[in-house]
Length: 436
Image: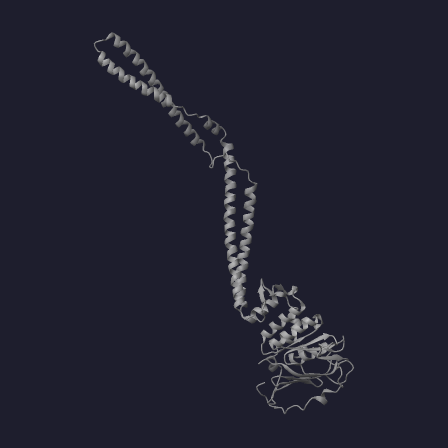
């Protein structure tokens, strides 16, 4: 069960002359009053009593008082905490009368519970780290975030290169009529020689047609002279006629190939190759850009996977407050970073985290609750009650929301009485050295 404050009595600390308070077990106990009446002095006194001499005010004695500070706090676990005497020595007594010291108090008093500004004034990342360490995923989340940052940096570099390749490709000229590959002079000459050889064969075929024509004429004359061989010559003549027809038909279909384009290409090969190189550079830049874009998308998917891992890690964690999370190393509540949270949300988040730090510390000290309107104040008080948390807070107000009102160092409406007159006799103490 968490330890709370059942009763506190303060005398001659800062602006407080004599104040006695019995805070409610859960919810808000508001110490109200105007400025400079001793409200904050009450909280400072509690912090000093429970937190040790590092919380001792620089001028602890009430100005004008010859009596030293006197603090008396009764805790819900039965411990009695006192500071009194010239040196304000600490004395902690358990229900059996055994003595203890600051170490015993440190077992259940959370430092941030009595020094809330220390948490609220820390950086967003420090708050987030506090939360992550509490829920036990700090190291694991840090590892994932480190990997995410590395992938993000790699993706950023890849994206820059892809943009550069895109820009280079767009700025490059392109010649759609140029060949896809560089042109070789020797290949063009070889192509030219092959065409000339084919054209020579065509010429030979044309000459063969002329020879056949002459032969046919000679044979026709011989037919007239040699009647006796008519039949033989007619057969030969017919055959020769067939050959002639075939040769003439082939010769008609043959078309010589032009070398004009090749000759032009040979003459302009440097210019052609220049265009080809430009086209190849542009195509290579486009291919590179596409490749880097593909890498960029893969890295984006990897980053999304890592972020999903972080989300799942936090969703499974035992967070102290619904809507509380960590994103990019920053504390987030209901989608808002710390500097965008309302003052009441900041207090609620701080209280929840501090409660989680040391669950057996059932109280917290809050200063300056005048930043909350009445609706928000009531909501905050109700939330504290639901959480079973005790909050002792100050508010510049003399309204009905205040549990007590401090005037000039006293509780308004009560007769001032020295603490020594209202504190019951201390239980018998054990003077020997015990477990404390």
